[in-house]
Amino acid sequence: MKKFLFLAICLFTAGSVCAQTYYYGPRRVHRRQPRQQNDFYRPTVGVEGGVNIANTVSSYNTDYSTSSIVGFHAGITANIPVAYPFSFDPEVLFTQQGYQATTTDGTLTQRNNYIAIPLLAKFTLVRGFNFLVGPQINIPVTSTTTFDNGFVTSQESYYTDSGNKSNVAGVIGASIDLNPNVFIQARYLIDLGSNTQDPNSPIPNYRNQVWQFGLGIRFQ
Image (tube, rainbow, N blue to C red; front, side):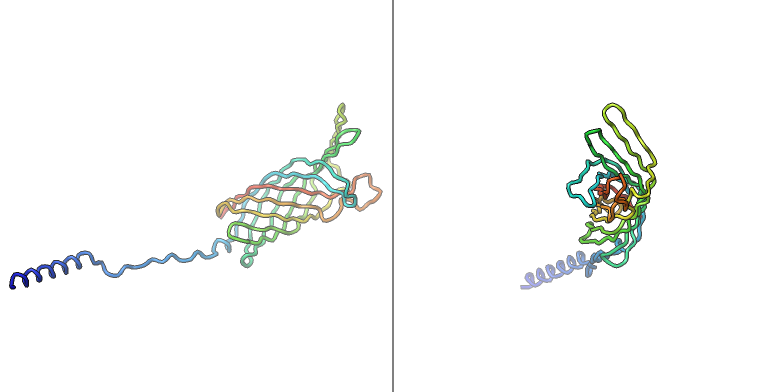
């Protein structure tokens, strides 16, 4: 009986020692704090650039159409948060627009260069995906018209007829944030008014339309 009692005491003592050896006290649980929208409320500036696919549509004749030309756009952009999910995205871009038209006499290509100022509202629909809409002010810089009849190519630069360009366009598009610093975007823009107010002008009464595809980098 004494042996059994002695053995029980030894086992109890050994168990207590092991418990003290492996017991480290209550564990502290480090809960991950939910990610807040701090990134959204951080103003940023950056650069962007990309490809333009531009042509024209008639202001009055639905049968009028022209072929597209390829140009580019590049400039600076900013993001100014207002209230989630809305922010203000102003930009200053150099952008190319224009069209190509084939007639029985030859091919005419007009390329217009602008300083464009998009004033866009950006809505974050889901994290990383944004909807863009707003006006764009186009300031004409230069214009080059080229005519090729298959034998002779003539070119006229700085085409300065004050009625041949519209100054305000509407923009709609979307952007995707690849990471906090890099984004891609696609936009469609069209002039809100015709290029000329003179019905007797020899210049076709058209509106520019452009598809833009670009890449941007933000600096934080």
